[in-house]
Amino acid sequence: MINKRLLIKNLLAHNDENSFYDKKRKLNIGEKEGKAKFLKHICALSNSNPKNNSYIVIGVEDEDNKIVGVDFFDDSKIQNLINAYLTNPPIVQYENIYFPHLPKGKVVGLVTIRPNGEITSLRKNIWKYYGGSVFLRDGSISMPKVFDIKIKDVNSEIVKTIEKSARNNIKLTLDSVINFINNEHANLESHYQVFKEQFVVCWAGIKQKKRDKTFYSRVDIELINEQVKLFYSALDQVEITYDDNAFTIVEYVPLGLQNKYKYYPLEKVTITFQPNGMYAIDSNLIFEAPQFDKKTLHHIYNTNNVILEKLKKNISITENEDHDLRNLPATYMICYLNGFHEARNKLDEARHLLKSYDKDIYELYKATIRILRKIKYS
Image 1 (cartoon, rainbow, N blue to C red):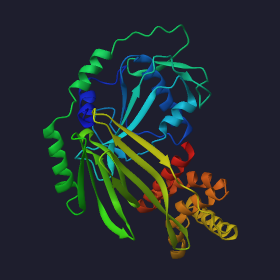
Image 2 (image 1 turned 60 degrees about the vertical axis):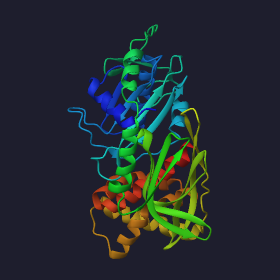
Image 3 (image 1 turned 60 degrees about the horizontal axis):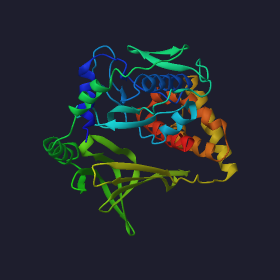
Image 4 (image 1 turned 180 degrees about the vertical axis):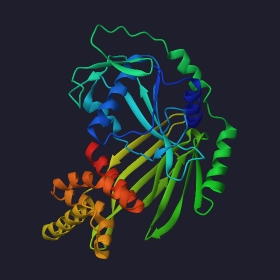
């Protein structure tokens, strides 16, 4: 079992970016350029490493390897994006890795690329890259190749050594459990559960009983052995269940209009543990968009547009408009899910305006975009 935090340290310490790993300050697959560059790097790393894993580390300064972190990102459907744009796609996994010095909610992203033995290429045009393009790593650069490709296995022994030196041990596991309970979440109710005598899952949050179910808010869930954060949210509610073989998370999101909210199930994630030291994560989107009165939605949509225009023109907004602004990301999303297709573009316009206006509203915006991203790739 690999301790992913140690693996990242080993990758960063081994060398600068090269033909088996890349590093990024941040990842933006919400915009066409960022998505295209991400796909290019996946393609190049997969082609350049036919017999070993390759990696992208996200949340690291390029100049000095300083680990600064990025927001928690839990797009379990990222493989759908890879499959949609790449021919002979590799298996790609995105994980959120805990580092003790980072602020709460910040992690280091680790993208693991498992080759498939075939030449990977772009399936269709995206940004300035043409369908059919093939990329390879030339040192630390992902370059297009237009000639006959002969791939050599030059990295498998190096990567095998790096991965071996990142193996977990009992001390790292125990230290991490104690740190999770006593330091990270000393002010919250915390639990741990051992599966198959090998895997340790820790979780913490504010516990609430509703009828026959137990929910947690301000939830943090971590697979301790690998230092992987399975879930983190300061907003949503989560139902946690487990048995001898599996740990299941059902996430609920609050949605509503005019201060009347209801919690809707969004996604069910089940981690199934095997006695051979392996585990599998299965994610299913179970969200059904709530439907609201169209007349009410038209009023809210127009109100949001007026507020957005005021922000664009740097015009002061009223106290009531400030209240509406705090609901703007969620209400734009509800409008979009109810057939107001332009509401998605309005959300994109609002991004930088909300970020500069209020930090808390921007956090609500990011939570909204996260839901829409899950829906899109499911």
